[in-house]
Image 1 (tube, one colour):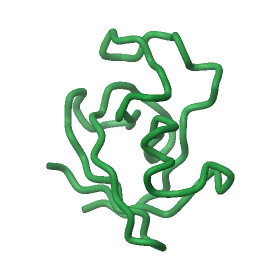
Image 2 (cartoon, one colour):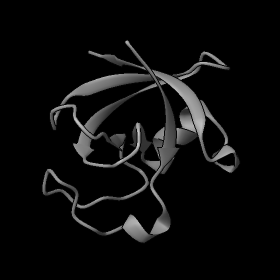
Image 3 (cartoon, one colour):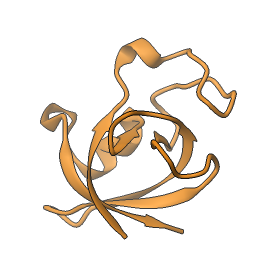
Length: 90
């Protein structure tokens, strides 16, 4: 388990190709991570609320983890922008 913080993809990424070759949209349960292998499924848990979501690493980022908007909404209000999370490989 890794303790980190989560953000979410901005609107400018909709329609762009991710590192795995698929096209990003807000509705997919995907995430970007700097080092986990593409295709890895992880459980991301908001450390403040205990809410969690399972996502597939499909892209790369320079931050801890960047969730799709739909995935982020499962664990926090997007107005928060960034939340502390635990990441567990499944």
